[in-house]
Image 1 (cartoon, rainbow, N blue to C red):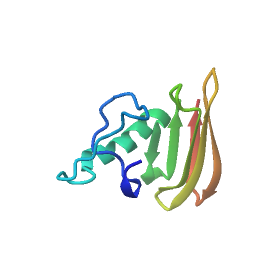
Image 2 (image 1 turned 30 degrees about the vertical axis):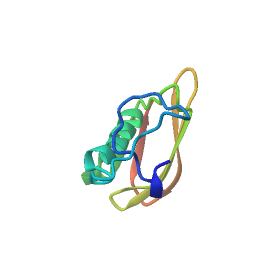
Image 3 (image 1 turned 90 degrees about the vertical axis):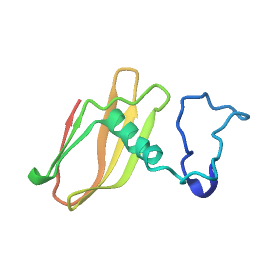
Length: 112
């Protein structure tokens, strides 16, 4: 774990082992903006959220968690004026999605 729960500088694809972990670069901007943005791109790829704020709608289109991730929870996810808690759970056949809590009038459409 990096200090202050920060993501590592680089996500480069090396396998993580107890002795092989991300290296700190103290002279670089920490964290670099592009490295931090990859977390949100990865989430977008896995759960395929398609927000349509002008029409007050969120489509979740065929979410697919990778084999290494069996469960994902998004809490206080804000779209427009609505806060959502979403859960994604992978089985052998597909990834299921459910709305755990919704505070606001956003329409949520799940396309499995």
